[in-house]
Length: 441
Ligand code: SAM
Image (cartoon, rainbow, N blue to C red; front, side, top):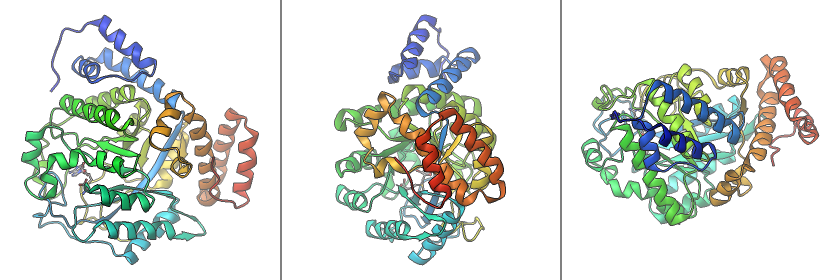
């Protein structure tokens, strides 16, 4: 709900001038902006979000694909297609063999980053997850390999998180869904997920275990978005206070239709596209150094707009069904997706709009995670790594997957290089086109 308040223009100017200096915003500032929604203010914030986004992230957009490993679930969440009583869902779980088939397909499309996703399935314990991760990293073919496995699974204990850390995961992602505790109780009827606190503290346990890239998120549509953003910013403040580091990413899923999950048919707090864009733009100016992740839950047109306003990472060519890359049927999907373009189509679209598709996985392999990353980000130094690695990884994509449109993509790459006029990059790109892989700084 957005409350109508008397808008104090001086206060708004003062908040926005702090945002412009990349100082970030506190939850009171953000609440004030959210509650002062007007067309005029919206345009001003959209402009600022775009400007800040390009100042910090330049033109690169990081691409990844989700890989669902199971949809058997012990939880009863009213909004999720995987909930245990959903009789209409076709259940499946991957074996090591079927996982390898999925990964091979993704590698052959050019994917370098996977987000491994699982329902809360007792058969997929942490040792199984580690086996999956090891299999993913070990698969290599002429087209390349997966270089970063991020993970979105149910909260674990510190000991279990330590195992994931040893398995070399990138980011551990967990969405609180709603920060409203009483509503959380209503939406999560039974199963381990019904424990609000255990979930809330999962990022802290992961940090305790040494995983320092954490992804947070809210499932928009479950409660008043103003309260959700306040909850999210409080969570971030706590993280920073205790561990000295904020989240690496924030995800912004919006509740979508999921067959057999009643709450998804009529979200209790529907958010229209325009206000959703406003929320994302405000998040961008409030936490300028945190990546914002957008999935294929949203359609291509809205995704294009949100990329301008602050999103820095997107999934592409996604399936939310375990085994869904090999078997295109979607009876096992978690929710319906709206952007059905292939990775290649999305790459082309990004290039046409002046963005650099990035397959970069350099930071965590170079130890630029957690606090180190934040430090590099806060004075803008990270941008020089991001720009170069985005270009190098895009060149590798072109060299290996750009056959049909090579001419067109190559011209774009050359245009990008002219803007950078960088001999170091030119030399590396020559090597990439002569067959070298995985060049990064
Ligand atoms: N078991 C893991 C956990 O506990 O976080 C994974 C959960 S699920 C596979 C990943 C995310 O999908 C959830 O955290 C939730 O935010 C989102 N989700 C669930 N149902 C959804 C729906 N109907 N529409 C959009 N997103 C949904």
